[in-house]
Amino acid sequence: MRLAFERRKKLIVQLCRETPGLEVSEPDGAFYVFPKVSSYYGKKATVNGQSYVINDNMDLAMYLLNVGHVATVGGKAFGDPDCIRMSYATSDENIVEAMRRIREALAILQ
Image 1 (cartoon, one colour):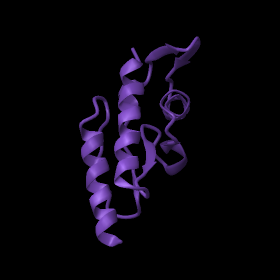
Image 2 (image 1 turned 120 degrees about the horizontal axis):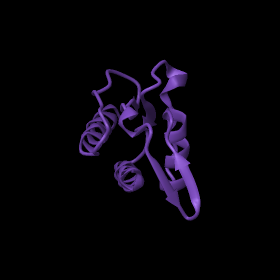
Image 3 (image 1 turned 30 degrees about the horizontal axis):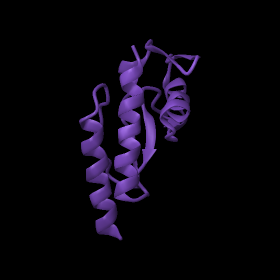
Image 4 (image 1 turned 90 degrees about the vertical axis):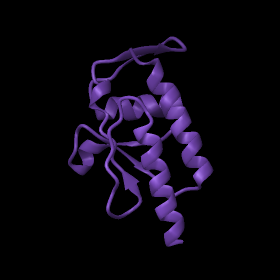
């Protein structure tokens, strides 16, 4: 199980680093990454008639939930208002799919 979590950590860190606008360091423990997302603050999108303005990490977390259908948590609750928290305690396939959805949702923001 430890090897599986190490593999998943490397996978999600790599996929975050490949996503424009995300900055991430490899975590030391647990099974969460905290990518910095502040490059998206001030961006906007209209999706299916719904307007979104990204003012902070909470706005981005809700946007990713509503548009990308991926649950993340604003990093402010964990001491970093420029980040979101994402878990990699799931399958490799789910990580790849979630990151695909996140990239697509982020690409809409202008």
